[in-house]
Length: 319
Image (cartoon, rainbow, N blue to C red; front, top):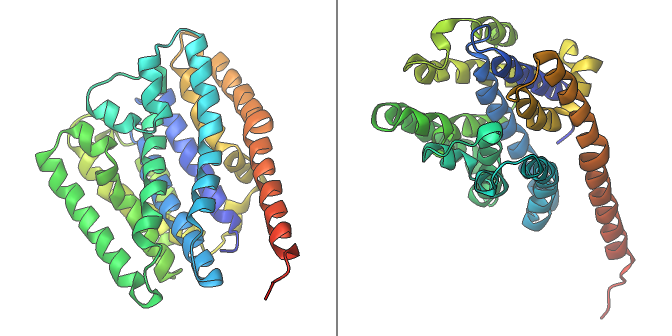
């Protein structure tokens, strides 16, 4: 899939919404809508990437897929966890984050403290693990109908789960958040659609996140998730057309370091330090994560892949 910079800009919008929510829920009560926006975006990008490789080569290299995702997530997460242990966090609270099951640990009632936000990363990791196994071998002619069907089932299950499961399960579990991930996958296989209302989806998300009715108290937060899902789907469709304002240099720079920013901002915001100090430390830790951990790992992986490709090309066929 050719890179669409506006999708990176949309990722920056999503992380800004979540950070605003974590800073002050009273001011930004529905900033958590950045999470379904991120899930739809992730489903779209990952599904597009999978089928770009399948259509180009005839197969999906699962080993390469998993290696790239593991190297993208785990080193930065490991550093955060080691720092948290060094400042006194118990290993029992760190293990769910490292094991990528922090979302279900929260469902079971385990308080993860300053690692609470890693439930989101666990959902993403579980999606990365399972999704290519589900869709990797689908014939091109069946992709739209099967992935669309999976999205409908996931949406229906989320609606049922609101009535029969605990709010903690609905909010944290992978099976209920699959609705947004699968919708993103469906958008990837149907391609961009010129929805006239789509250009208002991002302003709509940003405006509605200030409404207390969609805050984290009561059932409205769960049912409101369907409105967030609809707006997120339109936002991803709109961004996939490449609007220039989402390709702003600042947004793209924030998107580039967004994973480290997500990991570190909550650690400092939930510490007993002034907010301005927490924000400064968050930016510093984000920069350190990018330049000292994430980017070196990604560059090492790229060099390794280039070396392997060169080695394969240099091998002559034998009779």
